[in-house]
Image 1 (tube, rainbow, N blue to C red):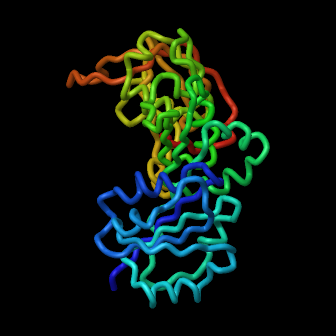
Image 2: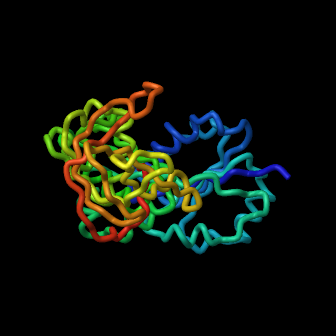
Image 3: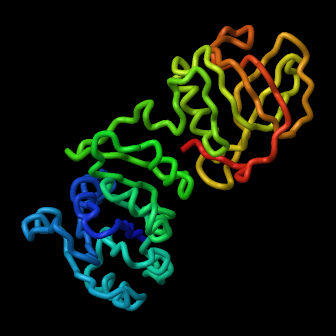
Length: 314
């Protein structure tokens, strides 16, 4: 049986959904030749011209009320159009969970949920309509925050969104529509400080960035909460402060951390929660000579278990 992929694009009115469909989704290599059925659930400023629809071999059906979207409707869509793929430009005021709960034809398969957010109004939505906004973003593989003016607190936006959906790919676009490349400003902590305090939820962010950009942390003091762990065979003047990090899904959770050394023996109890203060260096810990991030212990003391035991690399 040939599978018909279904792509859902959601976001509030005039947040850039149509632009996302036209300039991003429909330009991907996985869009197969053949008819694309486009279900348009609300109309914003950007429109689909008949010329564009003809060029892309798209059939557009307008949906006025959510009740039109039901098992019978989708069954008729399959029967009448036999689409190669289906794109649903969803109404951001409708609950996404209701759409995902509908029974689709057997050969239809949800391939991705993509969300758009207007950067000029994101702060207002987070303060006043947070639940409604986050309901859209919870299932999204890709979140595009567009129309970000210069000076926008992207790090704060990233943190707020990642708490709700840590596995989503998050892209920021400027007022000119171009992607804003991640910088130090996007980190949830100030990497310019001599001492960097890493919040519990940000351990995964720090772990990844420290591996990719160790020069940003070199010789600086870092402080964080972790669990104590000493791999078999490691010397007693070393241990590894670790956290459980979800790499791709809840079923794939592993312990990650960087080795921490001292000039004297380090007494630990496996699995205990500790607050670590250490100096960040980049050096070899084995005779093979391969360099990696290494922590030099300054202080270690007991700590309470974080509210979220598992973090992400988001």
